[in-house]
Structure formats: structure tokens, C-alpha cells
Length: 311
Image (cartoon, rainbow, N blue to C red; front, side, top):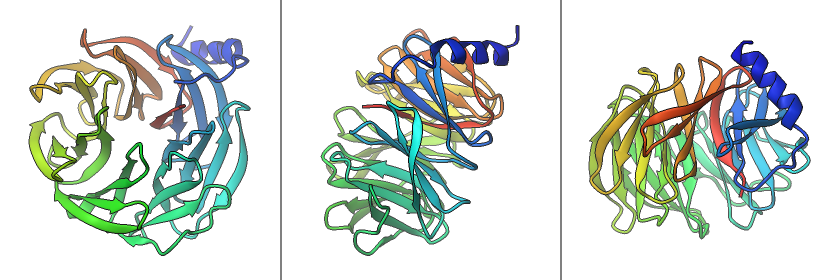
């Protein structure tokens, strides 16, 4: 039986399981789907049709997921418990990166054609204040307090730091070339930035807003995630079909793990389980960063690229 047929069988068996806290949701751009995954158990849950061209995804605190459609000028709102789209928020530009405020009432959306970051009402999609100009925004990450927003300015080779309440730029921090994906350490004292063109990871001290270190990884690092215990940082190397395991204490690469073709989004669901979305091979690798090995490979709908975890 092929991996894709196994995936379909698992979906039919597990689709009825209620969505649980800590489940991962994977955006499959080519298939127009979002798939629920129990990463720790290594099981596929329900698939949710969202329409063509989904890209970014963020989870709100109220069980809602927000999915951007850059080429279709909208944001899909998913009720995770019900497993269905419950709203479509229109967006005049090209929404890509997205972050949800901790109260669940506000979204921050990067528009890489209009070169701005907008603050939107999470229920209506209406703008809340004037957008912040940011050239070529890619990944967005918001701190747990909902006060500071970090934006990867891809072609400017920097991270733009925004006061999320006042909606103004606080500072900019230099990175490598082509910063794309961002992730905060569990204690939020560091920001990890994957730089797709310079093949490295910039580590930023969030207190001083200054670069702390640069770590060489593999070609085209497209995704990054620290483990919840803070021991490791996992970086996907798109062109190598691997992930680099970085020791967070020493900032040394301790090993590489082969995954699927063109790995992109990375998400840590536990200290010993990290999910990696493999765009070209249409599957999800689950790796154990401590053991530095792949422990499972799950077939998915075509074009898995980004992930979010349910709160």
C-alpha cells in the first residue's frame, strides 16, 4: 500500500476524533487544504477544504485558525473544533504572513505587494488603524503578551520590530540575506531568524534588539522552530531535503536529519517531536531532535508548506 493510500485510510479512521489542544494544522497550498495532525502520536486527523492558494496560518486562543490566501485577497477563518471554514475575511492586498493576538480579537497581516503590515479586526477583517510600512514582509511572530511584533523584511535583510499596541516601528535589526521565517525562544529572550539566501540562522537578543550570533546551516533555510524545553532549534534546509539541529546553549549544529523534498514549515509539538512540512514530496516528517532521526513520515494533500499548533 502506498504512503498516500495509508494517509487516506488514516484520515477515514481518525477524522471523527475531536480536535485536541496541541494538535498541529498543516496548510497544503496546492490542494487548498488544511490537515489536522496529532504530532506526538504520529496520526493524521481531519482534512478541511479552505479553497485555492492557502499560504500562511495562525492559531487564535479561541480555537480559531486563520489562513491567508495571497493570490485571492482573503483570509479563511476555521473553527478547529468543528473542522470547517466559518468565515471569509476580504483583504484588499496580498496577505501572506499572519499572527493572532493573545486575546483573539486582532490579527496582524503582512502584505508583500503593498509593503505593509496591517492590524485587522479578527471577526470582520476591518483595518484597525493605519498600516505600518514594511518592505517585503515575510514571516511574522507576536510575543505572548501581544505587545511586540517581529516582521522579517525579506529583501531588506532585517527584522522590523513593531509596537503592536501603538502600531509603530520600534527598531530594526540586521540579519543575514533573505530573512523569511521567525520563531521566539520559549522564554522569549531570543528571536531565531532563518535567512534563505545566506544559508544561516540569525539569533537576536530581544532585550537589547541586537544580533547575538550567526549560525551556518544548510541551503535555503525556510523554517525554524525551537523545542518547548528550549534545548534545540530546528531549521529546515529546503534545497538539501534536511533539517539542521542546533544546540540552543552552544549555538552549534549537532546534526542533520534527512526529511522529505523541499522542507519548509517547522513546528515543535513536544520536547522530542518536531513536525516538518515537505512541500515537493507532499508529506510530513516527524523527527526526534534529541536522537537526530526521523521517526515517522505521513502522506498529506499536495503542497504542504506551513504549520500552526492549536492552543
